Image (tube, rainbow, N blue to C red; front, side):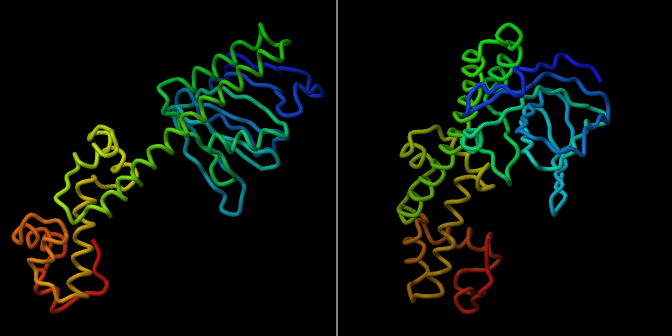
Length: 280
């Protein structure tokens, strides 16, 4: 095993801050299948995988195993038995820090960690990674300046929280788009109308829907209209033409085509022989 550096920030009996205490950290390049554990940590340990991949095992009721790759942070909580192993063909390289203090649980929650979520996927284009590396590699010259060290560490957490907030914003965009569809599906709305309403690019909206819903916004809108149409076929005596118009379709022909494509049935035949388990 080759080390780029392991640093004891301060004596383990010394408290930098009652809110947040730094213990040690460093950077490691692991050999194939290098493993550590099973072990129990006394403090919180964060690893940032900068290259390669490996596995983390948590000794819980399910004996949970995480496969972890580049640009991912994994958290080891105190008092939990863990083992982690470098991949055989692409052994990982990571930097790590060990911390504790009464503010640490809240800090980690603000960064998206919980007992059931031990991973942070860094999509910040290097901002989170660089903030952590700046902290780790500055420790030699700033080792005895607790204020500098803490400021760099808080900067790292600030970047993590900022990225998490961006992910939450993405969810808000999708929620608002769905609300807009619910309120306007019966009108001749387009995806361009939705993106204009949200004041975001149409391509960006497409990526958000694909990520969070698994389908495009156009497909979501169509599915929503068809579900409403199914309900009206079952619960009203409206004509097929009226249902098509009320569900936002341009004409009856388009409605019937999309309905048969989705359900392998015509609207008229479905009204005669409804299928309670029907779903898109």
